[in-house]
Length: 360
Image 1 (cartoon, one colour):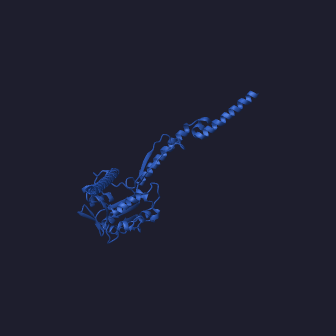
Image 2 (image 1 turned 90 degrees about the vertical axis):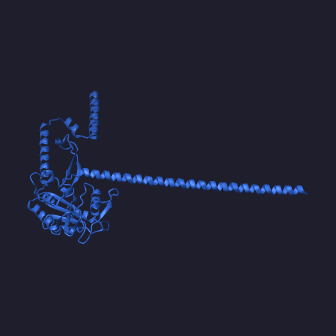
């Protein structure tokens, strides 16, 4: 009687113990899966940290590119007055040409009655004034009188004034000299705002009006015939957070008739070719910059006239000395394809002559 009971109890114990071990193994597998999920979450966090580091490196590279562009702009721009040299007195002297004899030519505005001048003013301002060095101001009537002196002394043909200050339109309200066009970043009672700041310096680096003016020209082809009206229409009040203003009652032409390159210099590469004139042979690529601020139209015309006269002399000398036969002329004037065609025709003619002579 005891044996069957013992066997039954032993079988029950073995089955119960097996199920316990199976549950333990299942719990161990679950713990392993949980550890694997934790490792996967850690790997995902590491990947996210790596992506964040990569984004930070990209931002740093972008900041470095921006600093490089800024350094390039500084290298391209010649600054004649900087720091505490920028005063109301010096500004008015530059406009009117009333300098001491010791002032070098590089610090003078060497313009004449054919010059197109751009006067771009930016800083802190208000109703009919602009601040200099936060210590002195220039009033709108001072600016108007200085520009009238420029006109009387024939220092410009057309003058474009661009003002980027609060209530910018009030600074050119007193102008009365003909030939002057003015554009302002804001109207009376409106503020002009900065665009963005440099996180390293902690201050704004450019104003909205200036930023979007630069954006207009950066997207403009140097061969474009865009007019000043297209520049003015590019100013979006929602982006500027103010309404741009312009005054053209003193200007003889409509804005759509004035190319922006009249006032903003363009640089283009001019390639002289010798395909038409012998006088241009051997000329190199030259880069010529036209800037109304740095060179007068009279000097430009003289330079162009001198260049044309020089080329005419060279051309006439070349024509006098040229004495070539028909084959040399063909060599100089035919392109490769035409020359090959002439040679082929000559060979065919030669073969025909040989056959004809052998028959005779």
